[in-house]
Length: 251
Image: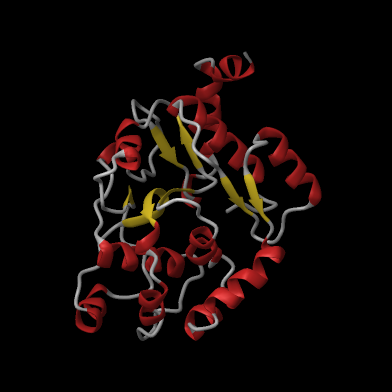
């Protein structure tokens, strides 16, 4: 999902992923409701085979889908990031997806991520590890009310998500947990973590971890979360330029 403030970042993210992965995965870009016609044209120019979902057009489809789930519907109508939970899966034309935020740059082939995505026998959801658990619900409440343990340090910015793990009945139950409706982006991440923990989850290796210090080192990618977003260009794009990424891209 992208917006008027980060659509250009998304282009860099996708260009770096496709370049270093060597893959031709189908692409679906979701508008958060703020993109203008100019951004739609530019994204389509760079990714002509992509589907770009206009949030205003998606409303009718998603509202109909969520009518049997009143808590889900209310959440979808009141939280700006909720399409990550509902729309991504509703528009998915596969049994699994690569969940990718607009602030993850790639610097070499993400071998283990690709292996897990492409293995027909790999049955877990698998995402990058956050610096700390950032949820709107306490893990003890989850154990008491839901009977399972929520995966610590789950980050919903990069990883493999199986379609059937985002079960609307489960999400409707999770949204009944006391106090779960909280911080606007932590609630989205919390729901992904809850669904994944109930379904089956395994975090990506440490080279995919969210890190707040400077330096790319030899890692395949870096998630430039809010605290280090300023490094996405001063460090990340600068490194890609130095290593010839732009020249290779233009050939």
